[in-house]
Image 1 (cartoon, rainbow, N blue to C red):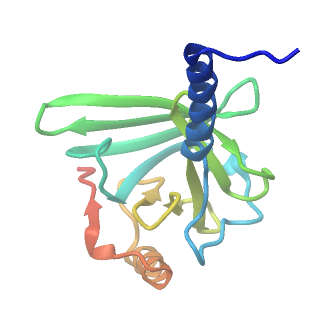
Image 2 (cartoon, rainbow, N blue to C red; image 1 turned 135 degrees about the vertical axis):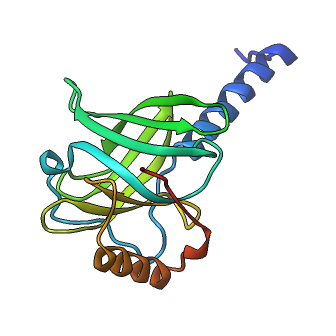
Length: 182
């Protein structure tokens, strides 16, 4: 028996298919060309509070100072992400809570992070010092980059090394916003 669908049924099927494709593409996580995620990586040493030293600015962090990121383990093995910053124009604190999961293996610092349901973005630790005090994190592409520190500042030598690595990957470091942590 051949069943013909009416326009509404066809529209529903096409809509569901389009939504699935959109979610798939929106959840696509990658790493900038030439960048490599830190491996071996020890998530237990990475957990805790980090201060944002610099970032490529984007709408969710626009006009924020005193930005921190705090990572902890969830019961299901995912990583709880709490980003916090002070909006200096509105004079109020802003907080976003999300979760992260490893893209493949937990010994490679390629993660995907979500603050909005099924939509994930790349979170790639591409440089970290041996003591896990300073890190450089790349997003999906050259529009996203963060320099992080366990303290409110970063030594000049570490900053210079990370900036040189970023330039070699194609980042325009003149676009970095240096976060006020004082």
